[in-house]
Amino acid sequence: MNNTSIQDINIADAKAVIQSYSIEDDLVLFDNIEDIHIPNNPYRVNCYVLGLCLRGKAQYSVDTEERLINTYDTIVIHNRQVIDSYMVSPNFKCIFLFISTNFFNEVVKGIHDLVSLFLFTRNHPIISLHAEEVELLEEYYAILKKKVGDKNNYFRKDLVRSLLLAMIYDITNIIYQQQQTSNKNQTRAEAIFSKFLPLLEANYKRERRVSWYAEQLCITSKYLSETIKQVSRRTPNEWINNYVVLEARVLLKNSTMSIKEIAQNLNFPNQSFLGKYFKDHVGISPSEYRRS
Image (tube, rainbow, N blue to C red; front, side):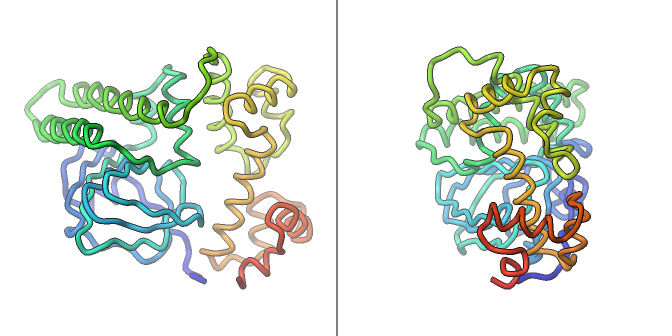
């Protein structure tokens, strides 16, 4: 087990290490992995990461779940996810975009269908592409890189924002095709889901009642449960439990915090409550999980 603490990495950190094309602390484009040293310790990304593997393969874990990337796979890492156990093949080549949360929210603001589909990648972060889809994303990357580098253009950031939105539209279209969702109109449901997840991300450590989230969204608990289940095939309780358990697992595996400290961090009354909760959802106690 890795007992080192979890390091937070944001756009400014990426810029300092990568020295690549960037716009302020909002966007970094990167395509030469040989230029950086991959950290061995776990780190939590405070941004969104979009990647496209052009050659070779890579292995990593996100929120303790192992993932394998192959040639022509696209990868999405969401804000606040923890990355660890990173390894790449000698011939690995990938293009990356690091996008700050604020800039990403600016780009997709008000587009509920787009946000809801993109959120699908939180649990399905790797999507295999066809050659023509890879070619399309490479074209987007090339023109983004050109516009990011054009510092004399007064509308540089606005142009990049528009290009990025177009690229995300094409990516989410690919996601839509692979998701095989129903043809029912779920605009209202998707809008609620897109509001529920950020609310959950901000409050799961201190609030685990479905009724509280329903109250914040000005709807009934029953309607919230039905809507979230319809869109994500998970109930609000399952989403809440998933966030809490993932955070507990990450802290148990990748930090030196005591179980008592983790219980306090996650707002449990005491260590025993955390132990029962964790065992109910994982099948073993926190101490057994830490030793495993």
